[in-house]
Image (tube, rainbow, N blue to C red):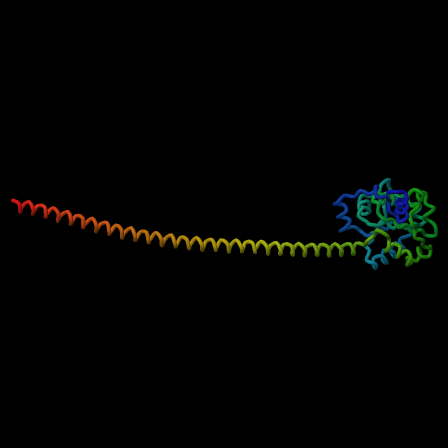
Length: 271
């Protein structure tokens, strides 16, 4: 990634690509079960606004996560919060005065930046820019500006809502799931069509082989019948020749008998 691309990525709240390494299983889990947005805020001054924001985003078909119980004090974020951050596609940072001073909010930003995904910072009358960690974690990212009046009333401006919904490189979960459903359905239909086509050719080939086998069987039967007829003819001819030979043998014996009798008679006449 060149310098200009890196700057553009930071303006959109996206970390450089080389910082993002996500496994296939983790990506699938985020795709199917993750939230569209993780709302990072300080409960002491942004609870009403965060609920109002989540409600408006839900109407836009975005799923949001709010840690309404708060993160306990400590050096590290709870495992369940880290897991939810990793499965979220966007971090919405509500930059109030309390959030600017919150260690938990800072840790959430640090953890989410590891994913390389979109961050939308919302600054309330410049409170976010006063955070000690602003220069290291947020500076350079495009910021949505909101008033303290909106914070107190809990009614996010349309500008902020639009900036979140229309964030670059972001597709909300319902749309992703719908795309996944139709892609899967199209794939299944294609597989079924290919299977039916393959089955058609297999059946046709099988039928052709059966027809060929039947033809060969009929030809073999015909040849066998002809061979049987020839055998019977040969057998009849052999019997006929045997009869002729026997008759010739009988006639020869009769001729010999007559010759013997004639010879005996001639001898008798001479005596």
